[in-house]
Amino acid sequence: MFQSIAIVGATGAVGSLIRKMLQQREFPYEKIMFLASQRSAGTTLIFKGEKHTVELLCPEAFDDVDLAIGSTPDPVAGEFCPWAVERNCVVVDESGYWRMDPNVPLVVPEINPEAALNHQGIIASPNCSTTQMVLAMKPLHDAGRVRRVVVSTYQATSGAGVQGQEDLVAGSRAFLEGQDYKCQAFKHPIAFNLIPQIGSPKHAGYTSEEMKMVYETQKIFGDDSIKVCPTCVRVPVENCHSESILVETEKKITVAEARELFAATPGIKVIDNLAAGEYPMPANCSGDDAVFIGRIREDLSCDNGLAFWCVSDNLRKGAATNAVQIAELLVKSQAAV
Ligand SMILES: NC(=O)c1ccc[n+]([C@@H]2O[C@H](COP(=O)([O-])OP(=O)(O)OC[C@H]3O[C@@H](n4cnc5c(N)ncnc54)[C@H](OP(=O)(O)O)[C@@H]3O)[C@@H](O)[C@H]2O)c1
Image (cartoon, rainbow, N blue to C red; front, side):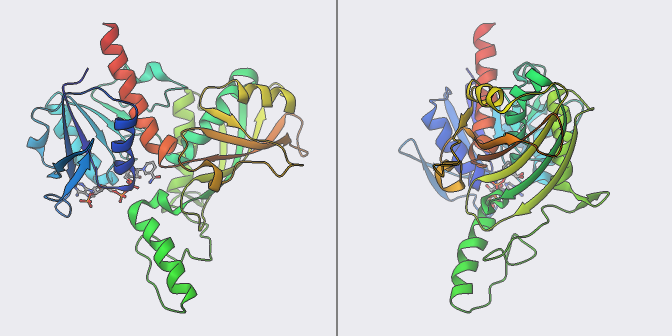
């Protein structure tokens, strides 16, 4: 058990859910601390029925902390993780800053749990759009070796944090009332619109969000030969990312086999009855830790291709749940020593 833990970015969209998950999953610790920026330092929050003051993130905050779970913007994580590691504190980090560092394992517990135990102080949790896709790929990769993935995402505004959530709600209200609204998190209005750009231009016409899906997938599976062609789109949905995924495997997997493989995979739930109008949607997946799969069908354009629809709560499995599961792996490994 870690004696003392800190939640860094405790006031954010992901941080708030991490607090909830720690409570729900009865994560063991003796002392807990909540850290954020100057903006929230000094405010109070309620955790397990008790009032806690949010403290300012600074190097000394980690003096007596054994485990930190961080969900801050990338540059903040780039700064605070070394402060923590220098003080022998292990960090599970949600940001994108450390994910591709060769010395930092990038972990989805259902796929590469062993990597988490091989850390040098920092363990990264993948981008939300990657996590649900790789979890869906896992049984297909094990059974038929995935060679190529074509994915289009339909990403919720909560993926852009508290400000993204505000932009959808306040922007929709303003739109309906014929008022102007200036988005804080997005370049364009998101109400009654969709935006085919998430992140900044990164490589060959792809955005940073899209290249995360390429590089993180290869790192998690430890296989650079898996090809991924992503298009990431922000849509006016409050919570849950949806993805249209097309997977080409070396060995053919039939629809019936895929359905069985998905159903047998921990962390995946199948809702797939087109005739009855049953499939995963953000409205029926929000608040659940699973990755939901439906619309499973053969790709009509190639021999060994499967197409399916995948929805997951980006704040849960895409972020908070995955981070807390990684922390639980660490607790378990301590208990096993
Ligand atoms: N949202 C998702 O679906 C999702 C999924 C996977 C990964 N992530 C990653 O998780 C991280 C957090 O995302 P989010 O959506 O929770 O964002 P958010 O709602 O904007 O929350 C950001 C958090 O970081 C804190 N923070 C900001 N600047 C800080 C500073 N200079 N010093 C200390 N704390 C600071 C904020 O505290 P204040 O209250 O003081 O501003 C807040 O607690 C990001 O790296 C994001 O890419 C997000």
